[in-house]
Every structure is written in C-alpha cells, then in structure tokens.
Length: 418
Ligand code: AMP
Image (cartoon, rainbow, N blue to C red; front, side, top):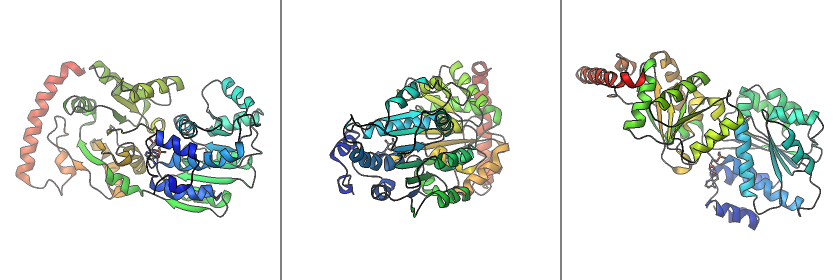
C-alpha cells in the first residue's frame, strides 16, 4: 500500500514525500482509514511503530476541510493528551511536519514552564492542542481553554498515563469535551484499567493492534553482560571505547544513577548528558538536541524522561540497570531497531538483578545472548546460565581468562576511575 491509496490531500502527501515516507507503516495502514471515516479507535501500538503519524495524518486531512482559510475563527478541534513534555513536543513537531502545507495552527502546552507564551497563543486561537494533563486542566480552570467545538480527542500512551497517576485527570478532561466527539486511544499495552477506560468513553470503537510485545524484542539484537554492580560504569566506558559505541542511549533506574554515569564518563573524556525529572525543561531539551546533533555521543536517561523520545536510527541502547518491570525493558529496546534498521541492546545484569532478568526473558520468550570474556564479570557469572555454560572445561577456561583480564583491566583502569 502507498500513501496515494489512502486518498490523502495532495499537500499532506507532499509533506510525507518531503520526509521520505514511501509507504504507510502497519499501524498507519490500519488506523488511517478508520480515523478518516470518523470512527472511534483503540490502537495497541508502541512508540516506534509510526503511531503518531497514524493519528496526525488523518486528523490534519479532516481538519483541512473544516479549517479552510487562515483567516477563519479558530476553535480547538483536536486535543491530544500525552503523559510527558517530551512526547508532547514530539507530537507537536509531527503535526507541524505533516501539516506544513496547510493553514492548520497547532500549539503544544505542558507544565514546568511559564504559562504566558502558551496563553498568548491560546488567545490567538489554535486548531490543534497537544497537552500534558496537568497543564491542560490548569489552563482550562483559568478560562484559557474552551473545548466546546472539539471534534477529535486523542489519548496517547494511555498505559503510561495510568502508570504516572494521570488517569483521574484524563477522566476529568474527557468530561470537558462534547459527547459527540471522536475518540482515539493509543496504548502500548492494554491493562484492564485501559480497557475499562475505552469501554466507558469510546463509542463503537474499532480495535487495531500491531507489533505484539515479543516481536519488537525479536527485531533487536540483544546482549547480556553479567557484571558486578560496582563495575558497571567501568564496563560501560570499556564498551564505548573498545566497541566504538556512539549514539548510545543509556537507561538507569534512578536520577542519581544517571548523574553518576554522566559524571564518570565525562571524567574520562566521553561527552555525555543526562535527562531526568530533576532537570529543567530547557536543560532536557538542550541535551536532547545535542544528542540528536551528535555533539554528545551518550545520553543517559531514566525511564520516565526517556519514554517516547524519538531519535531516528538510534543504534544502541544500554540497560545500565535492568528495569524491575519487564515491559519497561521492551519499551527501552524499542528505541532502537526502528523502521527496519538494525539495533543493538546491551544489558548489564548484576547479581541482585537476576530476578528481573528472569521476568524479562519470560515476557519476551527469548534468552538474551550472554557475552562473556569481558573484563568485569562477577566471579560466578557462569552459574547464572547453567544450560548454556555447563561444559566444565570451557567454564574454567573462561573464568581464568576473565579473571586475568579483570585484574589487568582493573589495574589499568584504577587510575582513571577513582
Ligand atoms: P512513532 O511511533 O510515532 O514514534 O514514530 C517512529 C518514527 O517513525 C518517527 O521517527 C517517524 O518519523 C517515523 N515514521 C512514521 N511513519 C513513517 C513512514 N510511513 N515511513 C517512514 N518513517 C515513518
């Protein structure tokens, strides 16, 4: 199927051609016709599948007919609710990109920044509003937002909004919109609370689903390094230098951990930056831009800050800490191996993380490939994977080799790291 087959407006097709998009992705193929006919939709799709364009393209197409000339009075016709500022900005960019040959005006609003520039834009009038839940409710309460003319409501990353405790805000927002709206709900996973939300607030919705959780995992090459907790930073540095990793997104479990990794890398001459909840919006944006422009080679992030970050052709993801929720692992590695490109995910597993590893492998129904022969294994790493490494002579050989490499490496690295 091509975009021509979807009967889109010429000016939207042109914008897609400018982006180099040739064919719709599976979620776009399924969702665009449904959205164009005005039906409610539940889309089970992860970031990386092209889901933003799957709703942005038909919304722009429909709005173009309603909005017409630039001079017409503006009402908010489409509202997109999304959990994080980063996602909101990326969705805004997508609407801008695909709608660049239309007169449709859009605005992205989120908390943590001064509201004045946002309210100034709202006063001028916008057709599409992209918002995080808190700021939307806040500005609505202050009287800056009128949703009476809303045509389409998009709930993006619904499961993430649930995880982040936004579900009541989302329900409040839905109640501010007209009953005859079109509602589109996108979620990477479909926990029961999301199904209930869909059943309550959507009407005769059609369900589309792409890339079940295991298929993302199958697309990406996944490696596992058993490593002592205290050696993880050294191993990361070793891989960056020796395997020439560049353009690496590193996940840590805590903000503090993210800062420590950045500090250690910088001390050793590796340009790195962190994004997490304690950084200001400006600082996060700056670091993200530097990473996208390849001014820094390593971006260290916590899950919430990184969720939905869209960086084209990201080659490497490092799970510096394994997540305690196995689905998070799938979200993380979904940052690489996009749009048919090869991706590599490297996971560090310390002894205390073995239960997390077990859960992950159960979920993805795959055993991660263990890389041994690196300088920082934990001494009894071989016992963690009994099936693969039961051949005793090989195990001893590896152990000896590892131990001697380890002592050499630790001698070499001592000065650099402490
Ligand atoms: P998303 O799932 O919305 O985060 O999109 C993932 C990435 O796929 C983004 O970088 C989009 O620019 C890109 N993309 C979306 N649709 C297409 C398409 N039809 N062809 C090529 N790339 C696409």
